[in-house]
Amino acid sequence: MARAQISYNKRELEKKKLEKRQAKQQKAEERKSSGSSGLDDMIAYVDAFGRITDTAPDPAHKEAIDLESIAVSVPKREVEEIDPVHTGKVDMFNNSRGFGFIRETGSSERYFVHANGLLEPVMEGDRVSFEVEKGLKGLMAVKVQKLK
Image (cartoon, rainbow, N blue to C red; front, side):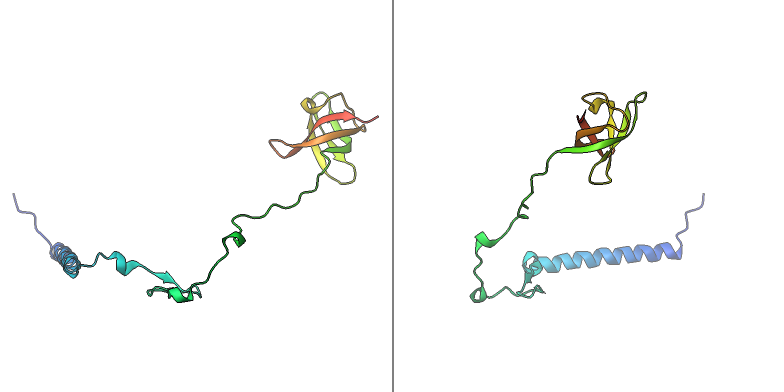
C-alpha cells in the first residue's frame, strides 16, 4: 500500500497553525512576566460629557446629588373615575346562535355580547345597560339588562 501523500497546501496550513500557537504562547508569557492582572488595563471611565476615557475623574469636581429628587418610576397619572355602566341599543342578536352586538349610545362603538353575558333575554332594538370587559378577541359586553 502506498503512503498518503501530503500536499503543499496541507503543509502550509500546518505551518500557519504552528506559528499561531507559538505566537499565542509567547503573548501569554509576556503577560505573565509583566505582572499586570489585565483588569486594570480594561477599566474605562465616563467623563461629565458622556465620553469614555481611561483617566479617573477628579474627586474635586464631584457634584452633590439630592437622592430624593431622583424619580425611579413614572409618576402615576390622576385617573378620573369612569362610570363602568354603559348604555346602548341591541344592534343585532341571534337567539339561535346565542350572540349579537350592542351599539353604545354617544359613540359608534359596537361591543360583542354573548348569551352568557345577559341577565335577561334581549331582542334587536332593545335599549340596554351593560358593562364592558376584556374578552378573548377584544372588548365584550357583560351584565346586560334591559332599560325600562
